[in-house]
Image (cartoon, rainbow, N blue to C red):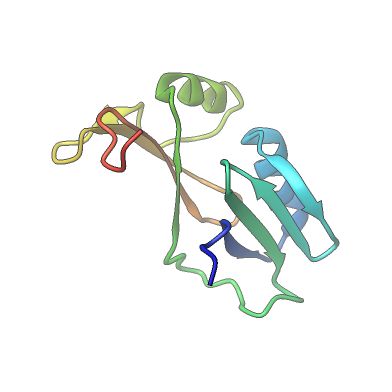
Length: 127
């Protein structure tokens, strides 16, 4: 058996075009698949986020989103500036956590999924 090649986290949306515009234009992720009911964005070397139309997907969107999408970046301040300059509302400017040596902030996509932008100041997973 070979190892895992990568990962896609799928999220489900009532308005997939609005979500698509957010992840493509606002977040600036590279779109690698664009079908009418599913969109996939490359966000890291082998990491992806998928958007699924609620009318055609296996699962249905829930009002309360039990998933947080955390994106690890190498320049938290640049990401904060980029997003706030586009009018994206965040919970606060980047802050260093008390128990984990990282800096981060939260925002929400158009469907209500929580997005965490974080920068590990000491990487717990190696270089």
